[in-house]
Amino acid sequence: MRPAHLSPDPPVVLVAHGSRDPRAAEATRALARAVAAARPGTTVRPSWLDHTAPGPAAVLRELAAAGHPRAVLVPLLLTAAYHRKVDIPAAVSAAAEDGPPIDVRITHVLGPADGMVDGALVAGLRRRLAEAAPSGYDALVLAAAGTRDPRARGSVGRVALALGSELGVPCRVSYASAAPPSAGVAVAKLRARGARRVAVAAYFLAPGLFHDAVRATAAEAGAVAVAGPLTDLPELADLVLRRVDGQQHAPAGNPAGACC
Image 1: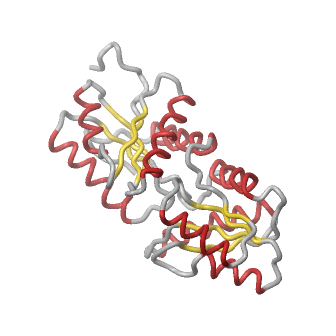
Image 2 (image 1 turned 45 degrees about the vertical axis):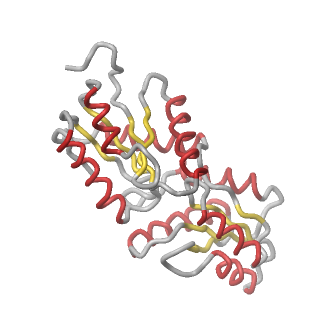
C-alpha cells in the first residue's frame, strides 16, 4: 500500500549517459527541474549511468524504500542503442536484487519511437536553431554523438529528414564519433554543392566534449552557426512527459521489471 503522504503519480527517474564534463550533469539536473515544474506534485529524480552519482539502481532502491510501489524510468538518450538495450535494464535488475520490490516501467528513448519523430523534438531543435542563426540558413547539418548501431543511425536520419522537411532546406547527418561524416565534412559537402549559409543543429541533450568538437569543426568548415544542445527546453520537458504518459498506459509489468 502506498503511504498516504506520497503522490498518486509514480516518480519519474531520468537516466542520462553521464560525462566527465560537469556541464552535462548540470544540464540533466536542469531538465529534471523543468519536468517537475511542468507536472507539479510529481517526484522527478535525475540519475546517470557513468561518471556522476547517483546511478539509476540507487535511485530506484531509495524510492522503493520510501514506499513508492512503482516508478517510470525515462532514458535520456536520443537513440535506442547499447545503453538503452543493455545498461538500463541491467540497472533495473540490480535494483530488484538489492532493494524492496518496485514496479519499474522503462519508456522509449527521446529519439524516434516506433519510427515516428515526435513533434516536440523537432520543435526543440528549431528553437535552438533560431537562437543560433536568427539570420537564417539555406542548408542544415544535424550533428549527433554517433553510434555503430545501424538502426540507431537510421533513427538519426529520420530526425534529419523531419527537420529539413519542416524547415524546407536540405539537412544532412553528421557524427562526433563512431561513424562518418564529421560535422566539418558534412558542412563542407553542402557548401561544395552550392549552399551559402550552412547551419548546424545539435542533436545533443547536454554540452560536453562532443558538442565542443562539433562546434569547432563546423566553424572551421564555414558553418554560419552551431546550435546549442537541447538541455532543459520546455519542448524537451514536454517530450519527457509524453514518454511517461505513454508508458503509464502500457500493460502491467512485474515488480522491478522493465517493460518496452
